[in-house]
Image (cartoon, rainbow, N blue to C red; front, side):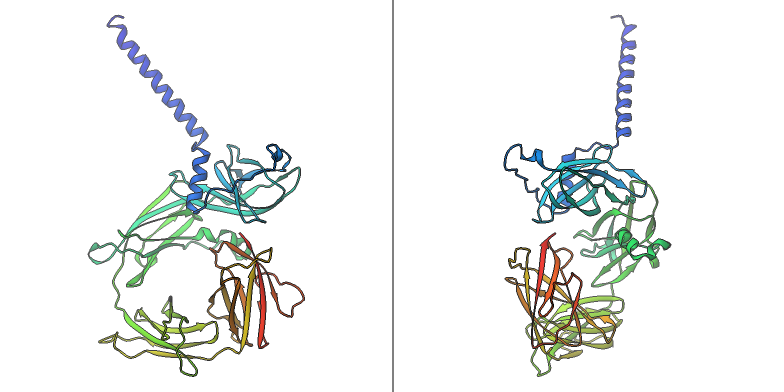
Length: 457
């Protein structure tokens, strides 16, 4: 090789290397991200604290060949296009088990064989940075031979990541501040239809808590529009993004990231103290006291002596005491003034409760009549006042619990949103047939019994 040929070959090799890089970049841009399906599934499981799926074991090695096929597409109703790389988790409605997960292919399609039965499908999307996951939609399907088509529909709004730090005076970080972003754009007329709004409302806010170093990160899909940043902390004045001109706008595009610094001001707090007593003068422990302090709401639990306390801001205070066996009582206290010695100062309020007259025995079972331990949420509706009273939680141990009811109130039973169980029916003593979830019950006997049937989500 002559000296004159060497530079030529170097240039030629460099040209082909650049061409190869360009081709790879083009293919990547054309095909989009190519994250391995197993990585996508693992990231979604981790975000949902979901264990590995329960294996589906056919009776014989070839038994699954006779199973019906479930197939369809992951479909974005906003763009009217199928979407690839959507993770679809499949849960058995009968057993309440997470059976399998799969990822839609380049055409947005998925296909799987399953035993005949009813299934819950939950769809997720993983952000390009592989750190953030957004829930898209859920739907149910009844699968029977030979096959069933079931498209998973959702609305793919822009994915937004907001990071920042919460600091106080002297720029010291503030941990455990609740940071949120709330939609503040123009109202869409279609949202006046409650069914329509219920589908999109989760895209109108997101929230997170600051860590020990004051930093926070929140992410998700948001409806295009203006969003204001808010922050709350027990010992600081609320941070209102609209007043502080701190917010961001979401446009119909991808990869939107925002960084904010939230400065919170300390607020002069005073100690609210009180006691909850029965009519005969005995203390009521484990009563829930709802404290409305201006626009903020707190809840505290009374101790063994029926006492409660909470530091409050210099805004009007209203307290409501609630216990499963007693009628609720409320008091408006106005503004709680500063105290020279808050700990030794006398109580600000004593709430006296009357006992409810009727006992209610609760039994909670699954579809096979096996007792289930859950935390029930019981809400009381007062028809005379036309409003819902503060709810209370009822712990069901060994499938049974009890509380006292008032004849003038209606009772509604639900399960917390994070409960692994869903309420299927309510059967009241004296009623000829089970009632659907969400029914309100009244009680007028000295002793009453109800039966709640739940199923795994």
